[in-house]
Length: 403
Image (cartoon, rainbow, N blue to C red):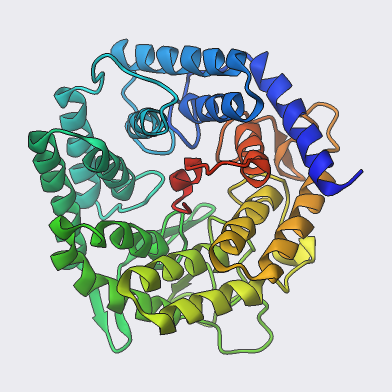
Protein backbone atom coordinates (compact mmCIF):
# COMPACT_ATOMS: atom_id res chain seq x y z
CA UNK A 1 0.00 0.00 0.00
CA UNK A 2 1.37 3.42 -0.89
CA UNK A 3 2.04 6.09 1.73
CA UNK A 4 -1.00 8.24 0.93
CA UNK A 5 -3.41 5.32 1.38
CA UNK A 6 -1.66 4.22 4.58
CA UNK A 7 -2.09 7.73 5.95
CA UNK A 8 -5.73 7.88 4.86
CA UNK A 9 -6.48 4.55 6.56
CA UNK A 10 -4.76 5.70 9.76
CA UNK A 11 -6.70 8.97 9.75
CA UNK A 12 -9.98 7.08 9.43
CA UNK A 13 -8.93 4.82 12.30
CA UNK A 14 -8.15 7.85 14.48
CA UNK A 15 -11.48 9.45 13.60
CA UNK A 16 -13.28 6.26 14.58
CA UNK A 17 -11.47 6.21 17.93
CA UNK A 18 -12.23 9.85 18.73
CA UNK A 19 -15.88 9.84 17.67
CA UNK A 20 -16.56 7.17 20.33
CA UNK A 21 -14.10 8.51 22.90
CA UNK A 22 -15.33 9.79 26.26
CA UNK A 23 -13.42 13.03 26.64
CA UNK A 24 -11.99 14.24 29.92
CA UNK A 25 -12.52 17.90 30.83
CA UNK A 26 -9.87 18.13 33.56
CA UNK A 27 -7.93 20.24 31.06
CA UNK A 28 -9.62 22.38 28.41
CA UNK A 29 -6.74 24.18 26.66
CA UNK A 30 -6.15 23.91 22.94
CA UNK A 31 -2.85 22.03 23.19
CA UNK A 32 -3.38 19.80 26.19
CA UNK A 33 -7.13 19.62 26.60
CA UNK A 34 -10.62 19.25 25.22
CA UNK A 35 -10.74 22.26 22.89
CA UNK A 36 -7.85 20.88 20.86
CA UNK A 37 -9.73 17.61 20.38
CA UNK A 38 -12.69 19.65 19.13
CA UNK A 39 -10.46 21.15 16.43
CA UNK A 40 -9.80 17.67 15.10
CA UNK A 41 -13.49 16.88 14.82
CA UNK A 42 -14.34 20.08 12.95
CA UNK A 43 -11.48 19.73 10.49
CA UNK A 44 -12.23 16.05 9.95
CA UNK A 45 -15.89 16.86 9.33
CA UNK A 46 -14.82 19.14 6.49
CA UNK A 47 -12.25 16.66 5.17
CA UNK A 48 -14.59 13.65 5.17
CA UNK A 49 -17.86 15.55 4.65
CA UNK A 50 -19.12 13.91 7.85
CA UNK A 51 -21.46 16.00 10.00
CA UNK A 52 -21.26 13.56 12.91
CA UNK A 53 -17.79 14.88 13.65
CA UNK A 54 -18.97 18.48 13.48
CA UNK A 55 -21.68 17.56 15.99
CA UNK A 56 -19.07 15.90 18.21
CA UNK A 57 -16.84 18.96 18.01
CA UNK A 58 -19.74 21.26 18.89
CA UNK A 59 -20.61 19.06 21.86
CA UNK A 60 -17.03 19.21 23.15
CA UNK A 61 -16.82 22.99 22.76
CA UNK A 62 -20.16 23.46 24.54
CA UNK A 63 -19.06 21.30 27.46
CA UNK A 64 -15.69 23.09 27.55
CA UNK A 65 -17.33 26.48 28.03
CA UNK A 66 -19.81 25.00 30.48
CA UNK A 67 -16.75 24.07 32.54
CA UNK A 68 -15.63 27.70 32.55
CA UNK A 69 -19.07 28.93 33.59
CA UNK A 70 -19.10 26.33 36.36
CA UNK A 71 -15.83 27.60 37.82
CA UNK A 72 -12.94 26.07 35.87
CA UNK A 73 -10.16 28.60 36.50
CA UNK A 74 -6.86 27.20 35.22
CA UNK A 75 -5.79 29.95 32.81
CA UNK A 76 -2.95 28.87 30.52
CA UNK A 77 -2.83 28.50 26.75
CA UNK A 78 -1.74 24.86 26.82
CA UNK A 79 -4.20 23.48 29.35
CA UNK A 80 -6.63 26.19 30.30
CA UNK A 81 -8.96 29.06 29.49
CA UNK A 82 -6.69 31.08 27.19
CA UNK A 83 -6.24 28.08 24.92
CA UNK A 84 -9.94 27.24 24.90
CA UNK A 85 -10.82 30.84 23.97
CA UNK A 86 -8.17 30.81 21.23
CA UNK A 87 -9.69 27.60 19.84
CA UNK A 88 -13.15 29.18 19.82
CA UNK A 89 -11.76 32.14 17.86
CA UNK A 90 -10.14 29.84 15.30
CA UNK A 91 -13.30 27.80 14.85
CA UNK A 92 -15.25 31.00 14.23
CA UNK A 93 -12.57 32.31 11.86
CA UNK A 94 -12.66 29.06 9.87
CA UNK A 95 -16.48 29.29 9.76
CA UNK A 96 -16.86 25.93 11.49
CA UNK A 97 -19.16 27.53 14.07
CA UNK A 98 -21.37 30.59 14.13
CA UNK A 99 -22.06 32.26 17.46
CA UNK A 100 -25.18 34.33 17.97
CA UNK A 101 -23.29 36.38 20.52
CA UNK A 102 -19.75 36.57 21.83
CA UNK A 103 -19.49 34.22 24.79
CA UNK A 104 -16.05 35.51 25.86
CA UNK A 105 -16.78 38.16 28.45
CA UNK A 106 -14.82 41.22 29.50
CA UNK A 107 -14.48 39.65 32.95
CA UNK A 108 -12.83 36.59 31.41
CA UNK A 109 -10.38 38.74 29.45
CA UNK A 110 -9.59 40.77 32.56
CA UNK A 111 -8.86 37.54 34.43
CA UNK A 112 -6.45 36.37 31.71
CA UNK A 113 -4.77 39.79 31.64
CA UNK A 114 -4.29 39.58 35.39
CA UNK A 115 -2.69 36.15 35.03
CA UNK A 116 -0.44 37.40 32.21
CA UNK A 117 0.82 40.24 34.37
CA UNK A 118 1.37 37.92 37.34
CA UNK A 119 3.56 35.76 35.11
CA UNK A 120 5.46 38.79 33.83
CA UNK A 121 6.26 39.79 37.40
CA UNK A 122 7.75 36.32 37.86
CA UNK A 123 9.66 36.49 34.57
CA UNK A 124 7.57 33.65 33.16
CA UNK A 125 7.17 34.48 29.47
CA UNK A 126 6.60 30.81 28.51
CA UNK A 127 4.37 30.21 25.46
CA UNK A 128 2.66 27.06 26.70
CA UNK A 129 2.31 27.94 30.38
CA UNK A 130 3.02 31.65 30.76
CA UNK A 131 2.69 35.19 29.43
CA UNK A 132 3.16 34.66 25.68
CA UNK A 133 0.29 32.18 25.70
CA UNK A 134 -2.09 34.86 26.96
CA UNK A 135 -0.64 37.34 24.46
CA UNK A 136 -1.18 34.85 21.67
CA UNK A 137 -4.85 34.61 22.58
CA UNK A 138 -5.16 38.41 22.81
CA UNK A 139 -3.58 38.70 19.35
CA UNK A 140 -6.16 36.34 17.88
CA UNK A 141 -8.96 38.44 19.39
CA UNK A 142 -7.28 41.61 18.08
CA UNK A 143 -7.15 40.10 14.60
CA UNK A 144 -10.77 38.94 14.54
CA UNK A 145 -12.81 41.58 16.34
CA UNK A 146 -14.95 43.96 14.32
CA UNK A 147 -15.23 46.37 17.24
CA UNK A 148 -12.90 49.37 17.31
CA UNK A 149 -13.33 49.54 21.08
CA UNK A 150 -12.32 45.88 21.50
CA UNK A 151 -9.40 46.22 19.09
CA UNK A 152 -8.08 49.16 21.09
CA UNK A 153 -8.44 47.19 24.32
CA UNK A 154 -6.52 44.19 22.95
CA UNK A 155 -3.88 46.54 21.61
CA UNK A 156 -3.41 47.82 25.17
CA UNK A 157 -3.12 44.28 26.52
CA UNK A 158 -0.55 43.27 23.91
CA UNK A 159 1.47 46.44 24.40
CA UNK A 160 1.97 45.49 28.03
CA UNK A 161 3.70 42.35 26.83
CA UNK A 162 5.82 44.23 24.27
CA UNK A 163 6.84 46.73 26.97
CA UNK A 164 7.98 43.84 29.13
CA UNK A 165 10.16 42.39 26.37
CA UNK A 166 11.70 45.78 25.66
CA UNK A 167 12.45 46.34 29.35
CA UNK A 168 13.91 42.90 30.07
CA UNK A 169 15.99 42.34 26.92
CA UNK A 170 19.64 41.68 27.74
CA UNK A 171 22.07 43.43 25.41
CA UNK A 172 25.10 41.57 24.06
CA UNK A 173 27.66 41.97 21.30
CA UNK A 174 25.55 39.72 19.08
CA UNK A 175 22.10 41.18 19.76
CA UNK A 176 19.54 40.78 22.53
CA UNK A 177 18.22 37.85 24.50
CA UNK A 178 15.97 37.03 27.45
CA UNK A 179 16.78 35.04 30.55
CA UNK A 180 14.83 31.94 31.59
CA UNK A 181 14.59 29.54 34.48
CA UNK A 182 15.53 26.16 33.03
CA UNK A 183 14.45 22.96 34.72
CA UNK A 184 16.09 19.59 34.19
CA UNK A 185 14.34 17.06 36.38
CA UNK A 186 14.55 18.43 39.92
CA UNK A 187 17.36 20.84 39.05
CA UNK A 188 16.86 24.50 38.18
CA UNK A 189 19.26 26.73 36.27
CA UNK A 190 19.24 30.31 35.06
CA UNK A 191 20.12 30.55 31.40
CA UNK A 192 19.11 31.14 27.82
CA UNK A 193 16.32 28.88 26.55
CA UNK A 194 16.29 28.65 22.75
CA UNK A 195 13.20 26.48 22.27
CA UNK A 196 9.93 27.33 20.53
CA UNK A 197 7.79 25.81 23.29
CA UNK A 198 9.31 27.71 26.23
CA UNK A 199 12.16 29.90 24.98
CA UNK A 200 13.38 32.79 22.87
CA UNK A 201 12.29 31.22 19.56
CA UNK A 202 8.72 31.79 20.73
CA UNK A 203 9.48 35.47 21.45
CA UNK A 204 10.91 35.90 17.95
CA UNK A 205 7.94 34.10 16.42
CA UNK A 206 5.43 36.14 18.42
CA UNK A 207 7.13 39.47 17.69
CA UNK A 208 7.13 38.56 13.98
CA UNK A 209 3.37 38.06 14.08
CA UNK A 210 2.88 41.41 15.81
CA UNK A 211 5.27 43.35 13.60
CA UNK A 212 3.04 43.13 10.51
CA UNK A 213 0.48 45.41 12.21
CA UNK A 214 1.06 49.19 12.32
CA UNK A 215 -0.28 49.20 15.88
CA UNK A 216 2.74 47.15 17.00
CA UNK A 217 5.49 47.49 14.38
CA UNK A 218 7.14 50.58 15.87
CA UNK A 219 8.06 48.77 19.07
CA UNK A 220 8.48 45.19 17.84
CA UNK A 221 10.72 45.68 14.80
CA UNK A 222 13.59 47.15 16.89
CA UNK A 223 13.51 43.99 19.03
CA UNK A 224 13.06 41.46 16.26
CA UNK A 225 16.26 41.87 14.28
CA UNK A 226 18.74 41.84 17.21
CA UNK A 227 16.89 38.94 18.86
CA UNK A 228 17.14 36.92 15.66
CA UNK A 229 20.81 37.74 15.21
CA UNK A 230 21.59 36.62 18.75
CA UNK A 231 19.82 33.28 18.50
CA UNK A 232 21.72 32.56 15.28
CA UNK A 233 24.99 33.33 17.09
CA UNK A 234 24.28 30.38 19.40
CA UNK A 235 24.84 27.78 16.68
CA UNK A 236 27.26 24.99 17.39
CA UNK A 237 30.74 25.51 16.03
CA UNK A 238 32.02 21.99 16.68
CA UNK A 239 31.56 19.52 13.80
CA UNK A 240 30.72 16.59 16.07
CA UNK A 241 27.26 18.01 16.78
CA UNK A 242 24.53 16.80 14.43
CA UNK A 243 22.11 19.51 15.56
CA UNK A 244 22.71 23.16 14.73
CA UNK A 245 21.62 24.40 18.16
CA UNK A 246 21.39 23.18 21.76
CA UNK A 247 18.16 23.33 23.75
CA UNK A 248 19.53 26.03 26.00
CA UNK A 249 22.73 27.64 27.23
CA UNK A 250 23.67 27.80 30.92
CA UNK A 251 26.81 28.60 32.88
CA UNK A 252 26.77 25.01 34.13
CA UNK A 253 26.91 23.61 30.58
CA UNK A 254 28.36 26.28 28.24
CA UNK A 255 29.87 23.87 25.72
CA UNK A 256 26.60 22.68 24.20
CA UNK A 257 25.19 19.30 23.21
CA UNK A 258 22.88 17.89 20.58
CA UNK A 259 19.24 18.87 20.77
CA UNK A 260 16.52 16.44 19.76
CA UNK A 261 14.81 16.80 16.39
CA UNK A 262 11.40 18.15 17.38
CA UNK A 263 8.94 21.02 17.39
CA UNK A 264 9.40 21.88 21.06
CA UNK A 265 13.18 22.27 21.17
CA UNK A 266 16.01 22.44 18.70
CA UNK A 267 16.58 23.30 15.07
CA UNK A 268 13.06 23.07 13.67
CA UNK A 269 11.40 25.54 16.03
CA UNK A 270 14.31 27.93 15.68
CA UNK A 271 14.38 27.51 11.90
CA UNK A 272 10.70 28.25 11.32
CA UNK A 273 10.82 31.23 13.71
CA UNK A 274 13.87 32.76 12.02
CA UNK A 275 12.22 32.12 8.64
CA UNK A 276 9.13 34.06 9.73
CA UNK A 277 11.30 36.87 11.10
CA UNK A 278 13.26 37.05 7.84
CA UNK A 279 10.05 37.24 5.82
CA UNK A 280 8.60 40.00 8.02
CA UNK A 281 11.85 41.97 7.92
CA UNK A 282 12.26 41.42 4.19
CA UNK A 283 15.75 40.13 4.97
CA UNK A 284 16.91 37.62 2.33
CA UNK A 285 19.99 36.76 4.37
CA UNK A 286 17.92 35.68 7.36
CA UNK A 287 15.58 33.69 5.12
CA UNK A 288 18.56 31.87 3.60
CA UNK A 289 19.98 31.22 7.08
CA UNK A 290 16.67 29.72 8.23
CA UNK A 291 16.29 27.50 5.18
CA UNK A 292 19.88 26.36 5.62
CA UNK A 293 19.19 25.37 9.23
CA UNK A 294 16.07 23.47 8.22
CA UNK A 295 17.76 21.80 5.25
CA UNK A 296 20.71 20.64 7.40
CA UNK A 297 18.21 19.04 9.79
CA UNK A 298 16.84 16.85 6.96
CA UNK A 299 20.07 14.84 7.14
CA UNK A 300 19.09 13.51 10.56
CA UNK A 301 17.16 10.33 9.75
CA UNK A 302 18.09 7.96 12.57
CA UNK A 303 15.32 7.76 15.18
CA UNK A 304 17.70 7.16 18.08
CA UNK A 305 20.07 9.97 17.13
CA UNK A 306 17.14 12.34 16.59
CA UNK A 307 15.79 11.53 20.06
CA UNK A 308 12.37 10.33 18.93
CA UNK A 309 10.30 8.17 21.24
CA UNK A 310 6.73 8.50 19.97
CA UNK A 311 4.66 9.75 17.05
CA UNK A 312 3.14 12.93 18.53
CA UNK A 313 3.39 16.52 17.33
CA UNK A 314 5.42 17.97 20.19
CA UNK A 315 8.52 15.80 19.95
CA UNK A 316 7.49 12.89 17.77
CA UNK A 317 7.55 11.68 14.19
CA UNK A 318 4.26 13.19 13.00
CA UNK A 319 5.44 16.56 14.30
CA UNK A 320 8.50 16.25 12.05
CA UNK A 321 6.31 15.22 9.13
CA UNK A 322 4.08 18.23 9.59
CA UNK A 323 6.88 20.79 9.92
CA UNK A 324 8.76 19.52 6.87
CA UNK A 325 5.52 19.46 4.87
CA UNK A 326 4.87 23.07 5.91
CA UNK A 327 8.38 24.12 4.87
CA UNK A 328 7.97 22.32 1.55
CA UNK A 329 4.75 24.21 0.85
CA UNK A 330 6.54 27.48 1.61
CA UNK A 331 9.79 26.84 -0.27
CA UNK A 332 8.96 24.26 -2.96
CA UNK A 333 12.24 22.51 -2.20
CA UNK A 334 11.71 18.76 -2.83
CA UNK A 335 14.12 17.73 -0.05
CA UNK A 336 11.52 18.86 2.50
CA UNK A 337 8.77 16.87 0.78
CA UNK A 338 10.93 13.74 0.76
CA UNK A 339 11.86 14.26 4.42
CA UNK A 340 8.21 14.71 5.39
CA UNK A 341 7.41 11.40 3.69
CA UNK A 342 10.32 9.71 5.47
CA UNK A 343 8.99 10.72 8.88
CA UNK A 344 5.40 9.92 7.90
CA UNK A 345 6.49 6.35 7.18
CA UNK A 346 8.40 6.18 10.46
CA UNK A 347 5.38 7.50 12.35
CA UNK A 348 3.01 4.99 10.78
CA UNK A 349 5.39 2.21 11.75
CA UNK A 350 5.16 3.32 15.40
CA UNK A 351 1.50 2.24 15.65
CA UNK A 352 2.43 -0.96 17.48
CA UNK A 353 0.60 -0.62 20.80
CA UNK A 354 -2.43 -2.87 21.12
CA UNK A 355 -3.63 -0.83 24.10
CA UNK A 356 -3.10 2.51 22.38
CA UNK A 357 -5.38 4.83 20.42
CA UNK A 358 -5.16 3.65 16.79
CA UNK A 359 -2.01 1.82 17.84
CA UNK A 360 -0.35 4.83 19.49
CA UNK A 361 0.83 5.45 23.02
CA UNK A 362 2.81 8.55 23.94
CA UNK A 363 5.82 9.12 26.16
CA UNK A 364 8.85 6.86 26.34
CA UNK A 365 9.97 3.36 27.25
CA UNK A 366 9.43 3.85 30.99
CA UNK A 367 6.12 5.70 30.77
CA UNK A 368 3.77 4.95 27.88
CA UNK A 369 0.35 6.61 28.16
CA UNK A 370 -2.85 7.14 26.18
CA UNK A 371 -3.41 10.78 25.20
CA UNK A 372 -6.25 12.19 23.14
CA UNK A 373 -4.99 15.80 23.02
CA UNK A 374 -3.42 17.87 20.25
CA UNK A 375 0.12 18.52 21.52
CA UNK A 376 1.18 14.99 22.37
CA UNK A 377 -1.85 12.87 21.63
CA UNK A 378 -3.96 11.24 18.96
CA UNK A 379 -5.92 14.38 17.96
CA UNK A 380 -2.65 16.05 16.96
CA UNK A 381 -1.57 12.97 15.02
CA UNK A 382 -4.88 13.10 13.16
CA UNK A 383 -4.59 16.80 12.38
CA UNK A 384 -1.07 16.36 11.06
CA UNK A 385 -2.15 13.58 8.72
CA UNK A 386 -5.22 15.53 7.65
CA UNK A 387 -3.18 18.60 6.68
CA UNK A 388 -0.92 16.49 4.49
CA UNK A 389 -3.86 14.85 2.71
CA UNK A 390 -6.34 17.74 2.50
CA UNK A 391 -7.01 19.66 -0.69
CA UNK A 392 -7.82 22.78 1.36
CA UNK A 393 -5.69 24.99 3.59
CA UNK A 394 -5.77 24.29 7.31
CA UNK A 395 -5.01 26.91 9.94
CA UNK A 396 -4.99 24.77 13.08
CA UNK A 397 -1.16 24.68 13.16
CA UNK A 398 -1.11 28.34 14.17
CA UNK A 399 -1.59 26.79 17.60
CA UNK A 400 2.04 25.61 17.34
CA UNK A 401 3.25 28.94 15.92
CA UNK A 402 3.78 27.19 12.58
CA UNK A 403 1.06 28.48 10.27
